[in-house]
Amino acid sequence: MANMRLDKNPMPAQDPNVRNKNFDEVALGYTEEMAIDEAKRCLNCKNPKCVSGCPVNVRIPEFITRVAEGDFDGAFEIITSTNSLPAICGRVCPQENQCEGQCIRGIKGESVGIGRLERFVADYHNAHGHKDGAPARPEPNGHKVAIVGSGPAGLTCAGDLARKGYDVTVYEALHLAGGVLVYGIPEFRLPKAIVQKEVKRLEYFGVKVVTNTVVGRTITIDELMEEEGYEAVFVGSGAGLPMFMNIPGENLKGVFSANEFLTRINLMKAYREDSDTPIMDLKGKKVAVVGGGNVAMDAARCSKRLGAEVWVVYRRGMEELPARHEEVEHAIEEGIIFKTLNNPIQINGDENGAVSSMTCIEMELGEPDASGRRRPIEKVGSEFDLPVDAVIMSLGTNPNPLIKSTTKGLEVNKKGGIIVNEDGLTSRAGVYAGGDAVTGAATVILAMGAGKLAAKSIDEALSK
Image 1 (tube, rainbow, N blue to C red):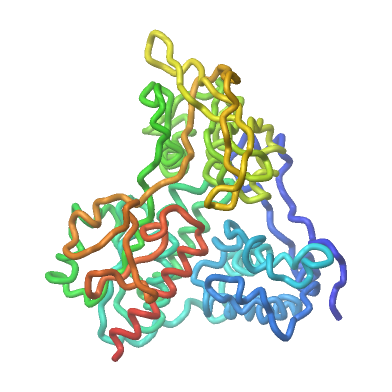
Image 2 (cartoon, rainbow, N blue to C red):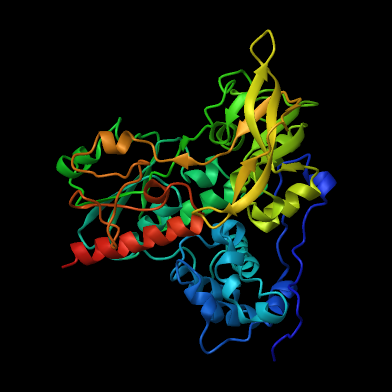
């Protein structure tokens, strides 16, 4: 019988005044009892719109039915038939705009907690293992594919192909696999041990991961195909080139791109006292994070954990913030101050060339622009100085031009994104691409969807 409660089972979480001083995971996860109770809220619709709202088409009602029955192993098998990274998706997917946004229960109350249930199932599997042990490797099919980048697009493409018997090798520029999942998303949202477990599970299927290899420098795509014998290459190299405002003072000491700041915090553990790559001491300092997306929330919340007083400076209002509602709520609970309808026009320095303040101007919202959001307009004469010791620019990223500049016949758009057709195929024969390398910075699940599409296209091309 369906549980007709209107609200979701709340997610247990650390107290805000405790968690804003540590990097432990904020959300603590459902218990078995909570998961079963939440699963019983699903109406098991005949026409499940939640599935069409998922970029990787997880069979949502089917896995939720298994959870409601207490068959967590069965639920895991259903999820992973289409999703290679369930523990990650359950934590960082914007479910409210995708599967949960389509849930019928959301019409009169809250949608079913699909993301929370997916996380529970994956965590249960990671904690208890599979009753049949490690999955068996598929029979090799004799075809060889290279993946550039071990982020969500690359790992998804690799996993889908390996399950079909392909000999798959993933090339990663950094020393740890995971791409943006390890360098971009903080530990308190996505523990790195979770990412490595997901990578390890793909290795059970035969995926090989080669780290410290910068494709375009260490080896080129041309060499992978012409000398190493790869029949197809998928480029999922992400978008790691940060954008700046080009205002005076952006070269001062204490100005960071969010990309650099988060990489040093997340991947290099710069917040630890014994770190080999320590970052600026922020204890008792004032930090401004410029931007309003999920990356800005991550940078702000990391700064708070390093002991800073933190402002998020955003040129539109609270309602226009592009970050997930949950991330904004968590930031507010943790003591982040939001200075919306403000925009920096200059960063000011002291006699030592270090940041001392940031000059901002107040904004007001006019008519909608091409994005559909109301255009921010400067209020003449409203300039003021915000005293800060550091500024973190979180304005988005573009793809690095390295792949384009070292690959024959690869076309890109004006922002550096690789141009692909509806099958994920680039202008270079045998080379496919997807995720942020194509679209610019977007979500983990959209990158996974692109990796899934490319894997299907590669399989269709090579299995003819």
